Image 1 (cartoon, helix red, strand yellow):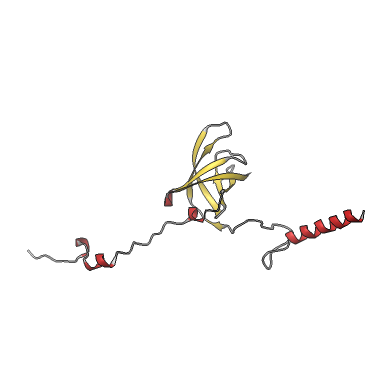
Image 2 (cartoon, helix red, strand yellow; image 1 turned 180 degrees about the horizontal axis):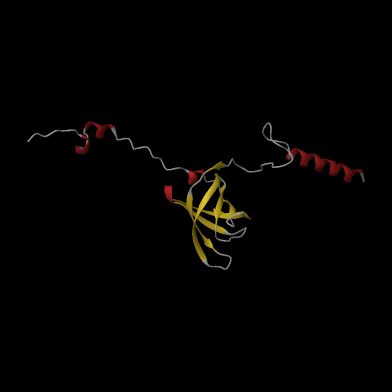
Length: 155
């Protein structure tokens, strides 16, 4: 009988160790975040392709709520289910990613909050396109284009 109680105590100790905060100030009993990577707010429209619950293929422009290297939380209007596969297309950087739905929740607006995960971490999928102008090579800087040369022509 004491082996059973010892096993129960050991299991309880392991469970308590799993609930310990990982960062100072975290609440150890509620809201413990077991995510593999940090989420960050990221508001962008992405194309989502999949099939409806009835088997029809759909396309929707969904909005991201937050993202991580392992997936995202999306706001969608088409009903979907846990376990379903979707294809996400990030138009801004011309990338696509297959993902799987791991959770859905109906929002007050009757839209769906859909949590998706990637089969492997893919941080590059969420990169923001650079708005910086490209640098010209030193060779091209010696010979500016005609549009860049300021000339006045007298008549």
